[in-house]
Image 1 (tube, rainbow, N blue to C red):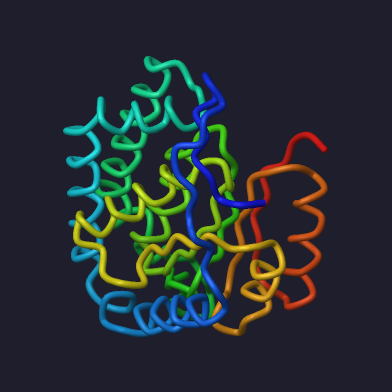
Image 2 (cartoon, rainbow, N blue to C red; image 1 turned 30 degrees about the vertical axis):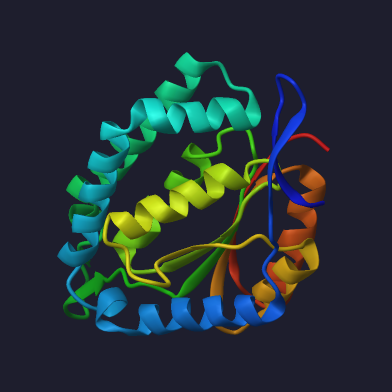
Length: 233
């Protein structure tokens, strides 16, 4: 299915987007993996939390602009779109303020000596997201993973490419380096290839049970972590 912005009110085509080829996918994986391995992913969390603070500020200051993008592209009532944008800003702010506490080492009592659990980034995360909450579904994946140091690659729904592109630009404007968050206009076959890639260590999907079964099977075959939010056929 082509990536197109079609106004659902009048069914008019606004814009069609070029899909990413395999070479561009490879470049995206290289950049995401390199960033995870760098001081950005492995070093001081504060540099990443600053991006979340800025991202929250950007979305809060552009509620009307961003809400109109959502409503024109997927038909959500404008007040609901405003609410979604505001919620995204709150999520970014929440993780900016609390991620450090969430990711602190957790001590465990043991008669054998000192013991604790540490939290570390695992690598590149591949996310497949739906159209119905076109910013929220992206933010809830990005915010915790950015804080932790994981790089995120996303295939958004083909009917909300403007939202997908806009969100990627917001992350970059907030100071996210290349590879921190990458939007790809790709096919299901390309998604499967990305999941199989050794640089990808986790998969997240929100979608139908059928899509979830396919993605879960692919992730499991490579012993990769996956989260699935499923509904419908």
